[in-house]
Image: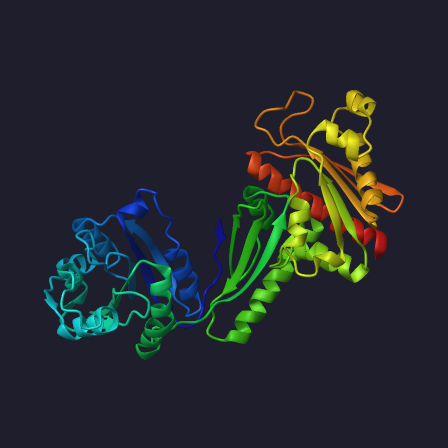
Length: 425
């Protein structure tokens, strides 16, 4: 979801990206090019108007070119190989009503670099040396398929090979230089990010309704169960843009604080937890069920984790809870494995077992089965044990199994940060 503010300054150029390949539209491979190129274009103050995925069919590719004909920049990826279904150049030539010709200079370069003067060269490879009159070949340092640049009535076409390892150097070199030469660079965005936890998009939309800002605000739900909020401004004066983003960020943080909604900057929660524990010189251990060891795993992603992380037990079965975590059969029978009482016992035992300052016990139902009316899927109990004091939490989450686990991890880390602040600051 996007809130649009007032955008001032130099007009930004419009670009579109066409990803070519039947394997893309059939879902056999993922188009990573459009994502990466879009982020790269934002550095140059260029807005992306369309992402289009199209098959190898010449007519379909030509229709895609027609859709984006009013853009300043058109970038294609794929369809420059030697096979029958590599039709990008032919489709562009037909769309522009131009003729292709065999470019001996391009062929000489391909031959020199990859075939090294061999007499018998596959005839199909000559297809990669086809050009349009006025077209400029883009050197490919990592493959046989050169790219092609063509300027048609101030629409700048960049035809690039599909593999990222081949097209990214082309973008970082030839493409970037061409943007500068043709004065296609616009106002660069100044941007800041916030990661917001525990609320959905519709809730945040209601909270931010009526916010006055000259910035563009966009927010979307990430796979790992937080809302990422982007604040950007595109004014020509960099310092003025920075100031407006900062003012808007402060307004939003004030609203979130008032609503008691937890957020961080552009940093993951595990990094925040690590930073707090390291600064406090405190250690932590986990007893996990629903997370399957992911809490401990998130901490050991960070270099230096051994300074604060003692260990983790995945007590998934009741037998492990009983044999290793000091949970009695009587306690499980009375309260159930997913309960405040079991989570607390696991937290206390983890702290004692590993000799850490802090122990965390987590138990819950990730689904899709295993729930009941009293204990539905998404129910989670966790306890944070600090010295001789326990902080108990009950949460109810919705989503599929994977999403629920991510929400549990985030919730545990959020409450852990709050407990650390309350206890030690």
